[in-house]
Amino acid sequence: MFDNFFLILISLSLGLSLPLIGVFVILRKEALLSDALAHTLLLGIALSIAFKINMMAGIFAFAILAGIGIFFVREKAYLGMDAVVGVFFTTSLAIGSLLISSTDLLEAFFGNLSNITKGDVIASIIMAVLIVGILLLKFREFAFSSFSPDLAKVDKLNVKKYELLFILILALGIAMGIKLVGTLLISALIIVPAATAKIFSLQIRSMAIWSMLFGLISVFGGLVASSAFKSSTGPTIILFGSSIFFLVFTFNTLLKQK
Image: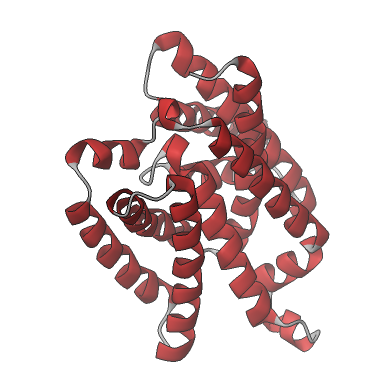
């Protein structure tokens, strides 16, 4: 089990980067994509175990391949995103379930803090800095291409380039947190804090700031609660974040009624 220093580091890396990605997922209305990519990476876990390679390296490599694959199949097959991710989702989930043992499968679904190494934490920190840096540096472009792709094209923005880059960022973000939260729950860590922020945020930038704050509270609070109550880490983190969502929703609804 990690000491408090590494708990803080993993809270910062996941709690800040994944909810920021979630802001653009919600703007693009592609929550299904994040869920499908998470389940697709189950095959990456299975292949890493089968070929005895470093788990995080295998997951990151497969995340890049899956992201590129989804983008180009959608472009060439002229299918909607929902159809393409459905194919990748079911195929990868089926193959991964056949290749992985029942014990490893359970950990892959729900995550396990005890299996995370210091190297995994360092890799997550590096990836989080990269993701947050790219999204903040190109915030306007990502927001514009997500919120109004047609107007972005008129403004001569290369929308397809940002679509591919965003899918890769999303895939790598999911890969970064999958060992902690698991394939079944990782998309919630992306969506829930951003959805909570959207309840009362009137601007995209304020939504981004609040989503990172809620994400940080969710991860850190969930880890502390998991340690205190000896509960599973992944589900506890998600339940902590969901509790914040319903509290904010209830409070905001009551304010609007006054």
